[in-house]
Amino acid sequence: MVIPGLGTIVNVAAIVVAGFFGAAAGKLLNERLQDGLAKAAGVCVLFIGIAGAMQGMLALDGDVLASGKSLFVVTSIVAGTLIGEIADIDGLVRRFGEWLKRKTGNAGDRSFVDAFVTASVTVCVGAMAVVGAVEDGMLGDISILCTKAILDFVIILVMTCSLGRGCAFSAIPVGVFQGAVTALSVLIRPLMTDSALAGLSLVGSILIFCVGVNLVWNTKIRVANMLPAIIIAPLLTFLPIAW
Image (cartoon, rainbow, N blue to C red; front, side):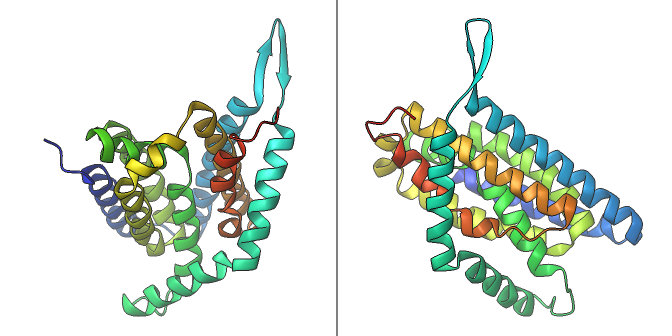
């Protein structure tokens, strides 16, 4: 019998190991190479986000490729961002990152908090985290989370090489988030309809795209403040509206 939560443990372990190897490799790279890797990671994250978003917004209508869900996307992201800005989720995450930086002896690492926030949003957002955690809790099936662990290993390895050790500590929010979903899987399972999952995946992919924008162009989109959108999106699918 598989222990509930084992999938999350595997995922967290993969991130920690990737962070360890990434930090070791990063010391061997000069600033130019680190910047190149950061841009490369950003481009990869951009296309991961674009692929997920296009999958949710484009569909074949006969021989024509049609787009849709624009109103759904706008409503989810605007409403979610409004809630996130009012709650200042980005500020809360950054304060936690500052606390982690001090407690882990990384007070001199100026990029620690940005690395922590960027990596945390990248590996926490997405349908795989939710569906995998639900499958783990309800069925003891950790296959989705094991697949996610492999993907996260590669992402965190590259990010840690370029952004710093803060990326490795994204294991903490991943453990808390996926562990909570696993614990609440009996309650969450009825909400995870195909439409709800599609909505979550679509909006989550757009948030991942925003992370890529930050990495490539050094912008400061407060993606953490947009996180409530991934809760609003599945809920909107239950409304009797043709999105």
